[in-house]
Image (cartoon, rainbow, N blue to C red):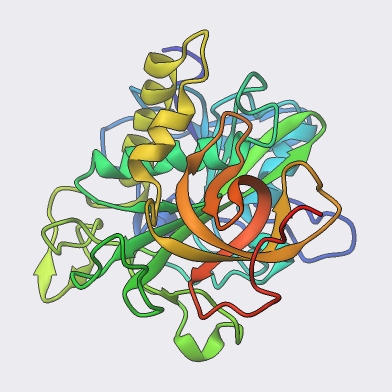
Length: 351
C-alpha cells in the first residue's frame, strides 16, 4: 500500500496553537463511525502510528492521492493543517476533515458558522503555477466548482472564491437579486511555512440564517444540492428526498478531491489552463454588476466602487469588467447586484 493512500484519525486530538483551546479534540474510531464523517467499512483495522511527536490511527484507503487526516471538533481545519505542516506531515494534496469548527473563518477573518454535518476541509495545494500567485484563489475555486459539477451539482464561482447555486428564476444577463442565488460554500487560502492551504467549506445540511449575516451581504446562504434537488449526503433530506449515492462527508470529499486532482493534472499545460475552466463556471458572466471596494489591477492601493459587465478572468487572476470607460481588471472587490449609479459609483474616467 502506497504511503499516501491512507486515512489518519487524530484520535488523541491536537495541542493548542498559542493560548487558544486545543486545536482538535480526541475522536475515537467509535465516535467517527457514528458521525457524518464516517469512513465506509472495509474490514481494514486501525493501526497506531507515531511521527514527529504526533500519534494517530491509520488504515489504508485505495484511491487517495495523499493522506487524509480526520479530527473531531476543531478550532478550524486550517489550524489542523498548520500543525501538520509544521510537523512535516502534510505533503501536497494532503487534506484534513473536521467534524465541526469552533473558530472557522472566512474572508476578512469573518466568523464561519461550522456546526456538525457540513464539510470543513483543508487541502494543501501545489507550489507551482497558478498556485504561486494571486491566481491561486480563483483557480482553486474553479477546480472545486468543476469537481462539484461532476457530482451533478451545478454551482457558480463568484469571483474569486465563493460558490453559489442559482434559483430557477435567475436568467442571465439579468443580475440576480439577493434571494435569486444562495451562497453554498467558500474557500480561504492561507500560507504556512511555504505551504499554501485552501480551507474549503460546503453547506451540506445547514446554513446560517439571514439574520446572522452582515448588513451588506451579497446573497443569502443556502444548502448545496444536486440538479435533481437531492442533497449530496445520503442521510440528508432536501425537499423530502434522500440521496443514496453518497453516504458520508468522507466519501464525498474523497470523490471531490480526486476530481480536483484529476482535473488539475489533465488540464495542466504550458499555457495557463485554469482561466478557461473558471470561465465555464463563472457567476454573472455578461451581467451588469457592482464591484464594491474595487481594487484596480494597475493601482492596488486605491479602492473604489465600480459598475460594469462581467467579461471573465485573466491569467493573473483578475476579474475583467467592461465599464463605461473601457475594459478594466481588478484584483479585489466584492460582487454585488448592480444598483442605480451615482457620481461615486462608477469607474472614474482618466484625467
